[in-house]
Image: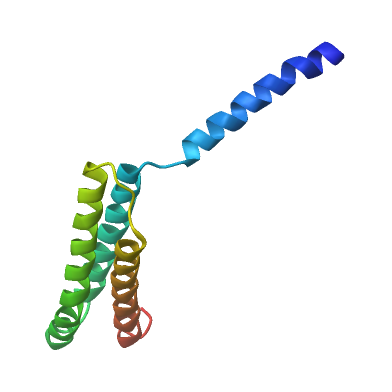
Length: 117
């Protein structure tokens, strides 16, 4: 029984280390994940926008331009940081999150205008 315990402990330790390695993402992985999320948000915005009348589409599209631009600029900064091997700084991350959340707010407003449909 003691031998089994002694054999299991190193295996558990290796599994723990492997789990930590898998959960730690590189800056490149993070940048890709953020870009993928932002692209999904933009796609959702576009899909919902198309369901509105033309005047409402123009209104929401013009409201989205500054947020979409800010999001893309912060993502480009993340890409440059990743290419240089640097970590994503808090300011860039906050700019990204603010832009993404603003786009999500616009999607919610569109859905409210549609009557929740």
